[in-house]
Length: 180
Image (cartoon, rainbow, N blue to C red; front, side, top):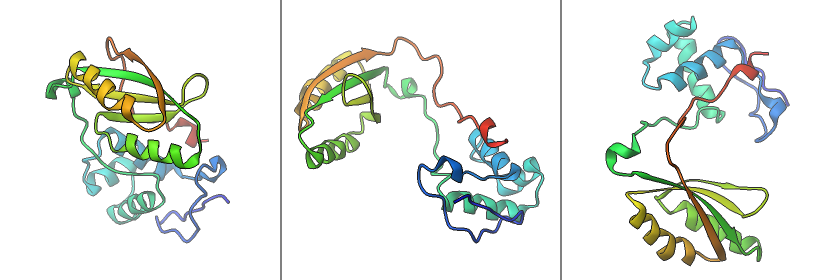
């Protein structure tokens, strides 16, 4: 079901189904809000309204609607990991035993609980998960991999590659496909 929203910023339509690519029906103001907040999430509502060409009240309603519908999932500061002593970024392919749904859910829960793991994805091809792991140095990563990752339930093996330099990170999501 396509989600329609009046220009006033109010909505009466049900939310889109998760993963339904056809459910995206954002107008130019919604897209502009997403664009501006990706660039600077600290904008005041007044400044955001000026940038997108609406008054403050409908801008505020639209931001709240985008949050409620799950388009905006949060706000956070981007911290330079190297400045706080986290100099190692590792990409870890984790091979897991595929012994059943409950075992996989337990492994997922334990991975989610590890603060050193900043991202985790199911992957195709070889391996089960691709993790992004941060550590202070190679010794700290080595200890983490041996003492923690290899001791997680159902883990068969891990394969690690290290970042030698960051070319691009924390980029804003492209929105050009929404302006059809």
